[in-house]
Image 1 (cartoon, rainbow, N blue to C red):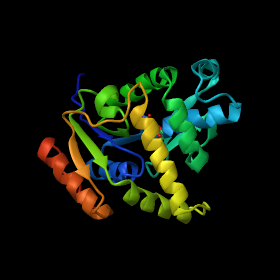
Image 2 (spheres, rainbow, N blue to C red; image 1 turned 120 degrees about the vertical axis):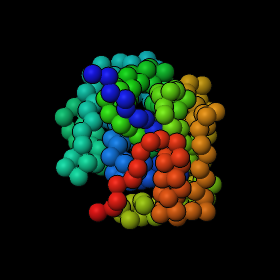
Image 3 (cartoon, protein in one colour; image 1 turned 180 degrees about the horizontal axis):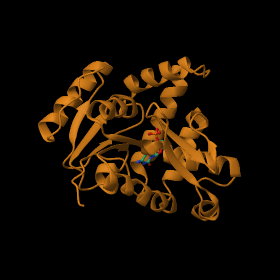
Image 4 (cartoon, helix red, strand yellow; image 1 turned 45 degrees about the vertical axis):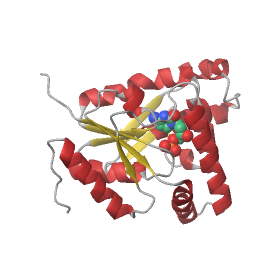
Length: 233
Ligand code: DC
């Protein structure tokens, strides 16, 4: 049986709202959502725990064969990341892991290791994947590509709010610095740098709140794919 599956690729810098919006889209259209950043974060966490040089191709290659990374979905449909049997879904959200993930994600050995895992998803389900290189590398033939962005100030404000709500002790300046450093690393790395695919629809959410951003994305989806939104429960 060769059933057509639809794939939506959402790329953009950190803090543009990719994950929260993609999650809501996946529920509204019954797509499976894959947060690919969470997979890179899991590798970043493992590298941090192993105490290796996170920018060394050789060091990372040495630990990869021993990592068992699993993606599961809980009863609420939320993605959980399992590293060698341990649920690390919360641990990978710590601020230092963002940078570790950005470090390891620049290594070809890391990207090659995770590529097939991401593509397999798209073959099996109607999917929405978010990340940095989904439209350019992972799913170059995605049915719809969206490049979601916002100014670094707007992104830092949102990320600060999220972190403070989680009880993480940080400041606007620290968050902005982290975002700008990651933008720099993610856009200037040699392999699969963050950039807008030529055929991606650009959505800038700097001036939009969450609900407005969601509505814009729904319009883009319904203009481009033969899918309709489930009425909300
Ligand atoms: O989306 P995020 O902040 O959870 O991603 C963490 C890091 O992982 C990000 O700085 C870059 C990297 N990443 C990547 O290189 N490619 C992806 N498809 C997703 C994330």
